[in-house]
Image (tube, rainbow, N blue to C red):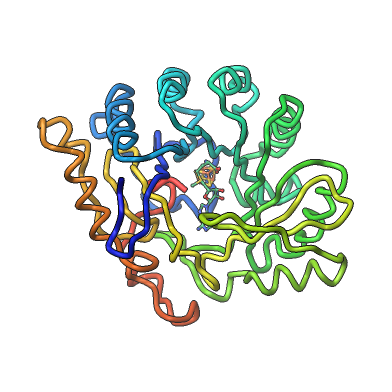
Length: 326
Ligand code: SAM
Ligand code: SF4
Protein backbone atom coordinates (compact mmCIF):
# COMPACT_ATOMS: atom_id res chain seq x y z
CA UNK A 1 0.00 0.00 0.00
CA UNK A 2 1.24 3.47 -0.84
CA UNK A 3 0.75 5.85 2.07
CA UNK A 4 2.29 9.31 2.18
CA UNK A 5 3.39 11.17 5.30
CA UNK A 6 -0.14 12.61 5.65
CA UNK A 7 -1.60 9.10 5.82
CA UNK A 8 -3.23 9.41 2.40
CA UNK A 9 -3.43 6.10 0.58
CA UNK A 10 -2.63 6.23 -3.15
CA UNK A 11 -4.56 3.75 -5.25
CA UNK A 12 -5.25 5.74 -8.42
CA UNK A 13 -2.71 6.05 -11.25
CA UNK A 14 -3.05 8.23 -14.33
CA UNK A 15 -0.86 7.15 -17.20
CA UNK A 16 -0.12 9.52 -20.06
CA UNK A 17 0.34 7.51 -23.24
CA UNK A 18 1.68 10.32 -25.39
CA UNK A 19 2.27 14.06 -25.50
CA UNK A 20 0.91 14.16 -29.06
CA UNK A 21 -2.56 15.45 -29.79
CA UNK A 22 -4.91 16.09 -32.68
CA UNK A 23 -6.11 19.33 -31.04
CA UNK A 24 -4.17 22.40 -29.87
CA UNK A 25 -6.17 23.74 -26.90
CA UNK A 26 -4.51 27.04 -26.02
CA UNK A 27 -4.65 26.50 -22.22
CA UNK A 28 -2.98 23.08 -22.50
CA UNK A 29 -0.43 23.12 -25.29
CA UNK A 30 2.08 25.97 -25.46
CA UNK A 31 1.98 27.71 -28.82
CA UNK A 32 5.62 28.74 -28.79
CA UNK A 33 8.38 26.28 -29.71
CA UNK A 34 6.62 23.15 -28.57
CA UNK A 35 8.81 20.11 -29.32
CA UNK A 36 7.22 16.67 -28.96
CA UNK A 37 9.04 14.07 -26.88
CA UNK A 38 11.53 11.97 -28.90
CA UNK A 39 10.10 8.47 -29.30
CA UNK A 40 13.15 6.84 -27.66
CA UNK A 41 12.17 8.65 -24.44
CA UNK A 42 8.54 7.56 -24.57
CA UNK A 43 7.46 4.43 -22.69
CA UNK A 44 7.00 1.42 -24.95
CA UNK A 45 3.80 -0.62 -24.59
CA UNK A 46 5.51 -3.40 -22.64
CA UNK A 47 7.19 -0.85 -20.35
CA UNK A 48 3.79 0.68 -19.59
CA UNK A 49 2.45 -2.80 -18.81
CA UNK A 50 5.39 -3.60 -16.52
CA UNK A 51 5.14 -0.32 -14.63
CA UNK A 52 1.35 -0.63 -14.32
CA UNK A 53 1.77 -4.11 -12.82
CA UNK A 54 4.26 -2.76 -10.29
CA UNK A 55 1.79 -0.07 -9.24
CA UNK A 56 -0.99 -2.66 -8.96
CA UNK A 57 1.31 -4.71 -6.73
CA UNK A 58 1.54 -1.63 -4.50
CA UNK A 59 -2.23 -1.28 -4.15
CA UNK A 60 -3.37 0.60 -7.26
CA UNK A 61 -6.90 -0.43 -8.27
CA UNK A 62 -7.83 2.37 -10.67
CA UNK A 63 -5.96 3.43 -13.81
CA UNK A 64 -6.88 6.29 -16.12
CA UNK A 65 -5.25 6.58 -19.54
CA UNK A 66 -4.68 10.13 -20.72
CA UNK A 67 -2.25 12.30 -22.64
CA UNK A 68 -1.90 14.35 -24.88
CA UNK A 69 -4.59 12.49 -26.69
CA UNK A 70 -4.35 8.80 -25.73
CA UNK A 71 -6.28 7.61 -28.78
CA UNK A 72 -3.71 8.98 -31.26
CA UNK A 73 -1.11 6.52 -30.02
CA UNK A 74 -0.70 3.77 -32.65
CA UNK A 75 -0.55 0.85 -30.20
CA UNK A 76 -3.25 2.17 -27.84
CA UNK A 77 -5.49 -0.85 -28.53
CA UNK A 78 -2.79 -3.23 -27.34
CA UNK A 79 -2.20 -1.15 -24.22
CA UNK A 80 -5.91 -1.01 -23.37
CA UNK A 81 -6.22 -4.76 -23.86
CA UNK A 82 -3.18 -5.49 -21.67
CA UNK A 83 -4.21 -3.17 -18.84
CA UNK A 84 -7.75 -4.55 -18.90
CA UNK A 85 -6.30 -7.87 -17.71
CA UNK A 86 -5.18 -6.23 -14.45
CA UNK A 87 -7.47 -6.10 -11.37
CA UNK A 88 -8.21 -2.40 -11.86
CA UNK A 89 -11.03 -0.10 -12.92
CA UNK A 90 -9.79 1.18 -16.25
CA UNK A 91 -10.91 4.56 -17.58
CA UNK A 92 -9.88 7.05 -20.22
CA UNK A 93 -9.81 10.82 -20.73
CA UNK A 94 -10.12 11.78 -24.39
CA UNK A 95 -10.97 14.69 -26.63
CA UNK A 96 -13.37 12.31 -28.37
CA UNK A 97 -12.16 12.81 -31.93
CA UNK A 98 -11.20 9.19 -32.56
CA UNK A 99 -13.54 7.69 -30.00
CA UNK A 100 -16.00 6.04 -32.40
CA UNK A 101 -13.25 3.74 -33.71
CA UNK A 102 -12.44 2.54 -30.20
CA UNK A 103 -15.85 2.12 -28.56
CA UNK A 104 -16.17 -1.64 -29.25
CA UNK A 105 -12.64 -2.27 -27.96
CA UNK A 106 -13.22 -0.14 -24.86
CA UNK A 107 -16.44 -1.99 -24.07
CA UNK A 108 -14.73 -5.33 -24.61
CA UNK A 109 -11.97 -4.19 -22.21
CA UNK A 110 -14.55 -3.47 -19.52
CA UNK A 111 -14.29 0.33 -19.69
CA UNK A 112 -17.65 1.67 -18.48
CA UNK A 113 -16.92 5.35 -17.92
CA UNK A 114 -15.24 7.95 -20.12
CA UNK A 115 -14.20 11.56 -19.59
CA UNK A 116 -14.62 13.52 -22.80
CA UNK A 117 -13.50 17.13 -23.12
CA UNK A 118 -15.71 19.77 -24.71
CA UNK A 119 -15.41 23.43 -23.69
CA UNK A 120 -18.11 24.92 -25.86
CA UNK A 121 -21.36 24.03 -27.58
CA UNK A 122 -20.58 26.43 -30.44
CA UNK A 123 -18.63 25.06 -33.44
CA UNK A 124 -16.82 28.36 -34.24
CA UNK A 125 -15.73 28.81 -30.65
CA UNK A 126 -14.52 25.20 -30.58
CA UNK A 127 -12.19 26.02 -33.48
CA UNK A 128 -10.87 29.09 -31.66
CA UNK A 129 -10.14 27.17 -28.45
CA UNK A 130 -8.69 24.04 -30.03
CA UNK A 131 -7.32 25.51 -33.28
CA UNK A 132 -9.03 22.66 -35.13
CA UNK A 133 -12.44 22.45 -36.79
CA UNK A 134 -13.67 19.25 -35.13
CA UNK A 135 -16.75 20.19 -33.10
CA UNK A 136 -19.13 17.97 -35.07
CA UNK A 137 -16.87 14.92 -34.67
CA UNK A 138 -16.67 15.32 -30.90
CA UNK A 139 -20.40 16.01 -30.60
CA UNK A 140 -21.26 12.93 -32.66
CA UNK A 141 -18.85 10.76 -30.68
CA UNK A 142 -20.19 11.89 -27.29
CA UNK A 143 -23.58 10.66 -28.44
CA UNK A 144 -22.05 7.46 -29.83
CA UNK A 145 -20.50 6.80 -26.41
CA UNK A 146 -23.86 7.36 -24.72
CA UNK A 147 -25.57 5.07 -27.22
CA UNK A 148 -22.95 2.43 -26.44
CA UNK A 149 -24.01 2.58 -22.78
CA UNK A 150 -20.97 4.44 -21.46
CA UNK A 151 -21.18 6.69 -18.39
CA UNK A 152 -20.02 9.95 -19.99
CA UNK A 153 -18.47 12.80 -18.05
CA UNK A 154 -17.87 15.95 -20.07
CA UNK A 155 -14.94 18.12 -18.97
CA UNK A 156 -15.47 21.84 -19.52
CA UNK A 157 -12.63 24.21 -18.61
CA UNK A 158 -14.48 27.35 -17.52
CA UNK A 159 -12.76 30.52 -18.77
CA UNK A 160 -13.57 34.24 -18.43
CA UNK A 161 -14.66 35.89 -21.66
CA UNK A 162 -14.44 32.58 -23.52
CA UNK A 163 -17.17 30.20 -22.40
CA UNK A 164 -18.53 31.51 -19.10
CA UNK A 165 -21.62 32.63 -21.05
CA UNK A 166 -22.33 28.97 -21.87
CA UNK A 167 -22.43 27.60 -18.32
CA UNK A 168 -26.22 27.43 -18.19
CA UNK A 169 -26.38 26.03 -21.74
CA UNK A 170 -24.26 23.09 -20.57
CA UNK A 171 -26.64 22.55 -17.64
CA UNK A 172 -29.62 22.76 -20.03
CA UNK A 173 -27.97 19.97 -22.05
CA UNK A 174 -28.24 17.67 -19.00
CA UNK A 175 -32.05 17.94 -19.07
CA UNK A 176 -32.66 15.33 -21.74
CA UNK A 177 -29.18 13.88 -22.11
CA UNK A 178 -27.60 11.70 -19.41
CA UNK A 179 -24.23 13.45 -19.50
CA UNK A 180 -22.32 14.45 -16.41
CA UNK A 181 -20.87 17.90 -17.05
CA UNK A 182 -17.83 18.89 -14.97
CA UNK A 183 -16.78 22.54 -14.96
CA UNK A 184 -13.04 22.78 -14.24
CA UNK A 185 -11.39 25.90 -12.85
CA UNK A 186 -8.60 27.00 -15.20
CA UNK A 187 -5.22 25.87 -13.83
CA UNK A 188 -1.68 27.23 -14.33
CA UNK A 189 0.82 25.16 -16.29
CA UNK A 190 4.01 25.93 -18.17
CA UNK A 191 3.40 28.06 -21.21
CA UNK A 192 -0.33 28.69 -20.75
CA UNK A 193 -0.01 32.32 -19.57
CA UNK A 194 -2.38 31.64 -16.67
CA UNK A 195 -3.82 34.62 -14.84
CA UNK A 196 -6.21 34.39 -11.89
CA UNK A 197 -8.40 36.94 -13.67
CA UNK A 198 -9.31 34.33 -16.26
CA UNK A 199 -10.52 31.76 -13.75
CA UNK A 200 -14.27 31.34 -13.39
CA UNK A 201 -14.51 30.23 -9.80
CA UNK A 202 -16.61 27.47 -8.24
CA UNK A 203 -18.74 30.14 -6.51
CA UNK A 204 -19.29 32.09 -9.72
CA UNK A 205 -20.22 28.93 -11.64
CA UNK A 206 -22.75 27.93 -8.99
CA UNK A 207 -24.20 31.44 -8.71
CA UNK A 208 -24.65 31.61 -12.49
CA UNK A 209 -26.49 28.30 -12.53
CA UNK A 210 -28.62 29.10 -9.49
CA UNK A 211 -29.90 32.24 -11.20
CA UNK A 212 -31.73 29.96 -13.64
CA UNK A 213 -32.15 26.64 -11.88
CA UNK A 214 -32.99 25.16 -8.50
CA UNK A 215 -30.15 22.76 -7.81
CA UNK A 216 -29.70 19.92 -5.35
CA UNK A 217 -26.29 18.95 -3.95
CA UNK A 218 -25.40 15.31 -4.50
CA UNK A 219 -23.21 13.29 -2.17
CA UNK A 220 -19.52 13.33 -3.08
CA UNK A 221 -17.38 10.25 -2.58
CA UNK A 222 -14.28 10.39 -0.36
CA UNK A 223 -11.73 10.84 -3.17
CA UNK A 224 -13.91 12.87 -5.53
CA UNK A 225 -12.31 15.93 -7.05
CA UNK A 226 -15.78 17.16 -7.96
CA UNK A 227 -18.61 18.81 -6.09
CA UNK A 228 -21.68 17.27 -7.68
CA UNK A 229 -25.16 18.72 -8.24
CA UNK A 230 -28.34 17.90 -10.09
CA UNK A 231 -31.23 19.96 -11.35
CA UNK A 232 -34.23 17.89 -10.23
CA UNK A 233 -35.83 16.20 -13.23
CA UNK A 234 -32.68 16.35 -15.36
CA UNK A 235 -31.23 13.09 -16.69
CA UNK A 236 -27.64 14.25 -16.29
CA UNK A 237 -25.78 16.04 -13.52
CA UNK A 238 -23.20 18.80 -13.23
CA UNK A 239 -20.18 19.25 -11.00
CA UNK A 240 -17.37 21.66 -10.33
CA UNK A 241 -13.67 20.84 -9.99
CA UNK A 242 -12.46 23.67 -7.78
CA UNK A 243 -8.70 23.08 -7.82
CA UNK A 244 -7.89 26.78 -7.56
CA UNK A 245 -10.39 28.07 -4.99
CA UNK A 246 -11.41 25.10 -2.86
CA UNK A 247 -8.89 22.30 -3.25
CA UNK A 248 -9.44 18.66 -2.43
CA UNK A 249 -5.80 17.79 -1.67
CA UNK A 250 -6.54 16.43 1.82
CA UNK A 251 -8.17 13.31 0.36
CA UNK A 252 -5.92 12.97 -2.70
CA UNK A 253 -5.26 9.40 -3.84
CA UNK A 254 -3.73 10.19 -7.24
CA UNK A 255 -0.34 9.70 -8.86
CA UNK A 256 0.77 10.33 -12.40
CA UNK A 257 3.10 8.72 -14.88
CA UNK A 258 4.11 10.93 -17.80
CA UNK A 259 4.54 9.53 -21.30
CA UNK A 260 8.32 9.67 -20.82
CA UNK A 261 8.04 7.54 -17.69
CA UNK A 262 8.45 10.18 -14.98
CA UNK A 263 6.36 9.71 -11.85
CA UNK A 264 4.70 12.81 -10.40
CA UNK A 265 3.15 12.51 -6.95
CA UNK A 266 0.96 15.57 -7.68
CA UNK A 267 -0.31 17.38 -10.76
CA UNK A 268 1.65 20.42 -9.58
CA UNK A 269 4.80 18.70 -8.30
CA UNK A 270 8.08 20.13 -9.52
CA UNK A 271 9.90 16.97 -8.50
CA UNK A 272 9.70 13.94 -10.77
CA UNK A 273 11.09 10.41 -10.43
CA UNK A 274 12.45 8.81 -13.57
CA UNK A 275 10.85 5.36 -13.37
CA UNK A 276 11.47 4.57 -17.04
CA UNK A 277 15.26 4.92 -16.80
CA UNK A 278 15.21 2.97 -13.54
CA UNK A 279 13.23 0.19 -15.22
CA UNK A 280 15.59 0.15 -18.22
CA UNK A 281 18.59 -0.01 -15.82
CA UNK A 282 17.13 -2.88 -13.80
CA UNK A 283 16.77 -0.83 -10.60
CA UNK A 284 14.22 -1.39 -7.80
CA UNK A 285 11.33 0.61 -9.25
CA UNK A 286 8.83 -0.31 -6.51
CA UNK A 287 11.13 1.23 -3.90
CA UNK A 288 11.42 4.42 -6.01
CA UNK A 289 7.62 4.63 -6.19
CA UNK A 290 7.32 4.29 -2.40
CA UNK A 291 9.93 7.01 -1.84
CA UNK A 292 8.24 9.33 -4.33
CA UNK A 293 4.94 9.05 -2.46
CA UNK A 294 6.68 9.77 0.85
CA UNK A 295 7.90 13.08 -0.62
CA UNK A 296 4.38 14.25 -1.52
CA UNK A 297 3.50 17.73 -0.24
CA UNK A 298 0.28 18.47 1.67
CA UNK A 299 -1.21 20.39 -1.25
CA UNK A 300 -0.56 21.54 -4.83
CA UNK A 301 2.97 20.14 -4.96
CA UNK A 302 3.88 22.65 -2.23
CA UNK A 303 3.90 25.38 -4.87
CA UNK A 304 0.70 27.40 -4.50
CA UNK A 305 0.21 30.58 -2.49
CA UNK A 306 -2.61 30.80 0.05
CA UNK A 307 -4.95 32.55 -2.36
CA UNK A 308 -5.33 32.12 -6.08
CA UNK A 309 -4.72 35.84 -6.67
CA UNK A 310 -1.27 35.56 -5.04
CA UNK A 311 -0.10 32.83 -7.43
CA UNK A 312 2.48 33.98 -9.97
CA UNK A 313 2.28 31.31 -12.62
CA UNK A 314 5.69 32.15 -14.08
CA UNK A 315 7.37 31.15 -10.79
CA UNK A 316 5.76 27.69 -10.70
CA UNK A 317 8.04 24.87 -11.75
CA UNK A 318 6.12 22.29 -13.71
CA UNK A 319 5.46 21.06 -17.22
CA UNK A 320 2.81 22.06 -19.72
CA UNK A 321 -0.42 20.13 -19.18
CA UNK A 322 -0.07 18.29 -22.49
CA UNK A 323 3.18 16.71 -21.23
CA UNK A 324 1.78 15.78 -17.81
CA UNK A 325 -1.52 14.11 -18.55
CA UNK A 326 -4.67 15.51 -16.99
N1 SAM B 1 -6.64 14.98 -24.72
C1 SAM B 1 -7.48 14.50 -23.70
C2 SAM B 1 -8.58 15.49 -23.39
O1 SAM B 1 -8.50 16.63 -23.83
O2 SAM B 1 -9.51 15.10 -22.70
C3 SAM B 1 -6.75 14.10 -22.43
C4 SAM B 1 -5.66 15.01 -21.93
S1 SAM B 1 -6.17 16.61 -21.36
C5 SAM B 1 -4.62 17.27 -20.81
C6 SAM B 1 -7.07 16.21 -19.88
C7 SAM B 1 -7.96 17.27 -19.32
O3 SAM B 1 -7.17 18.34 -18.84
C8 SAM B 1 -8.92 17.88 -20.33
O4 SAM B 1 -10.24 17.80 -19.84
C9 SAM B 1 -8.48 19.30 -20.43
O5 SAM B 1 -9.54 20.17 -20.69
C10 SAM B 1 -7.87 19.53 -19.06
N2 SAM B 1 -6.96 20.66 -19.03
C11 SAM B 1 -5.91 20.90 -19.83
N3 SAM B 1 -5.29 22.06 -19.50
C12 SAM B 1 -5.99 22.56 -18.46
C13 SAM B 1 -5.87 23.76 -17.66
N4 SAM B 1 -4.92 24.63 -17.89
N5 SAM B 1 -6.76 23.94 -16.67
C14 SAM B 1 -7.75 23.06 -16.43
N6 SAM B 1 -7.91 21.92 -17.13
C15 SAM B 1 -7.04 21.68 -18.14
FE1 SF4 C 1 -5.06 17.93 -26.64
FE2 SF4 C 1 -6.56 17.39 -24.52
FE3 SF4 C 1 -4.62 19.23 -24.37
FE4 SF4 C 1 -6.74 19.76 -25.82
S1 SF4 C 1 -6.71 19.41 -23.60
S2 SF4 C 1 -4.58 20.06 -26.47
S3 SF4 C 1 -7.28 17.78 -26.58
S4 SF4 C 1 -4.34 17.07 -24.68
